[in-house]
Amino acid sequence: MRKLLLITFVSVVACISSCKKSSKNDEKSDNPFGLEYSNLTTEEHKKEIEQAGVEFVQEFNSLPDEKSISVLNYFASLGLSLNEEVASVSSTLTISKHASEKNVAGILAAVNNDDVGKLSDSYGIFEWSANESAWNEIPSTEKLEFRFPSEEGKATNNAILTFSYVKDKDYTIDGEKVELPKSSTATLKVDGKTELTWTSSHEYKADGTPTKTSTSVTIGAFILASNTNNDGNNVSSGFSLKKGSKQLLAANLSGESTATVTNVNNEEDVENLIKNANADFTVMNFKFIGQANIKEIIKEIDVISGDNAGQKEAAVWNKHSQLVAVNTKDNSLIAKVEFQGSDERECYKYPVWDPNQGKYVDQENCWNYSSVDPLLVFKDGSKQSIDAFAENGFNKIVDELESLIEKFD
Image (cartoon, rainbow, N blue to C red):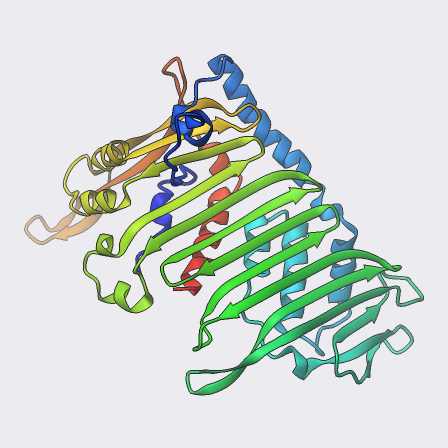
């Protein structure tokens, strides 16, 4: 199935966001296309963009040093035979693993794992016995809890990992009754101090299809929040990553369409299902924002063929979209975004037996390929690629947001 919203993210992070019509009094503040260029020089802008990337890495690099990461890694080493099939436990450990690897997209995917299962079937309190090197179980009807040492060599179980949830109701899915959660929580405490919390809430259609979910994970100083909604006409997904009160990263995807799994599979012209698709992407103090006529873009791109396909596709995006990069510190225009297409041809030779000549002769095989890349265009007309953002893995985050939306179709 064609991805409906990721179409708006040509290449990587050229982001499309709906722009409200503004009044005369606040035209510049509400309309990013009405902003004036900053007084900084182009070189100063380029340095600021590069510095934003450096600052993001510097802030984010301390995530693996949070206490909960090492504690959960040690917990995993104690053996998971008691709980390896419990999705909440598995996802929590996956979050820890991706956090230690500084993989934002991986954390986001684990946080939004909707395979929660019936947690109450696994309720119990499990205490680690250092003498026996085994878990001892105490029955519980309220929670799933693990009590264990926070690190190797500890004599006491000073770490407590607790899971609980509130049942929504039983739903019939594929002819089988399934219990789904209304809300769920996970908490890790070490020596009485909370080091990690994970909370989520969920709403469903009558058939069990999710319509709304909201999730928040706090790992020490870091807070990752995500949400997904589908009211039948609009679908959206977004997340933010903060360190304390400082926002490091944020992204939002939304769309208004008649798309469902059934009619997308049956519809020949996908543009007939789409009214609009929007997105925004913020890294530190830089925000990519714009608007586009998605229906026309899809329609024109679908009929492109022949030579110079990349250049033709870029021309379509430039014709039907406006995109800008804004410095959120002073709400000034840094650069406009334009799309540049490229077309290349590659050939290689391989030996083929020629019976007429009685020997192998070289035969050439060639193919054409094209690409479209977003470029920042500064006040003086100079251009700079924004591939640096993609290299930091931000495009993978957008992929994860898109995959969340697809669950709600």
